[in-house]
Length: 318
Image (cartoon, rainbow, N blue to C red; front, side, top):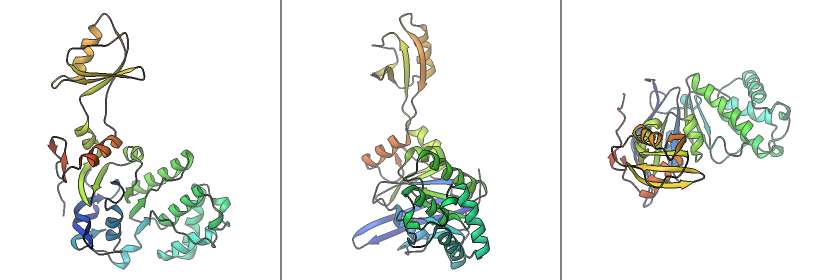
């Protein structure tokens, strides 16, 4: 789906002394999408975010934010939830949110009205007069999220937004992120929770040692990494099957790695025709994003490489 670009990063690099933290990194984020920014610790994600926010300057490359270079007016259209959380401990929750709303050019009345709306949504209304220092970890996490998004920004960058939340509060924050994307906000989510990325993100960027190693639609990336394998549950024993290269048994199921050219439906037909087994379940194995992450980082692939093939580049739209 074609949407207007909220963020265009072209060939940015940043070095500290002899260490190259970011190395010619390029990617785009569209309005209305939740975009996953992934990578191991020290990969260059935080440095990249700081360059996008104009906190530090790149040594090379260009960044277009909301249609052009960053300026003071655009900073009020951006929301940022950093990894290093930081609210004022001696202020009440309501006063803190109103203060942050005013920093983003909301009037005091609008900031207070929005704070009430958000506090009710995230189940913190009863804590509005508590000081920040009195909030639990989960409550503080939700308060930080509200402070970062109260002004309804057009570009939202969140670093581990679901960290420390129980399942109920995770669902609340995810619901807010979905609604923000639906209204057209571009959301960049940096996290190590791969299952959340699989659920929430349409496209991802995986960075390692400052370089882009995977980039594009998540569905395409998973498809390219998926092995020709199936998992079956049967009544009987499987020791040898025509067209199967390797059989592994675990947790009452068999995982079958198929020979090249053998399709899962061909194997299913063969199993169904066998008189010594009864097929109770049959499913193609899909490689998880967690497995892809580990494989790519451990293999130390060159930028853009995939196992045995190249990752196609997304076409740049000016």
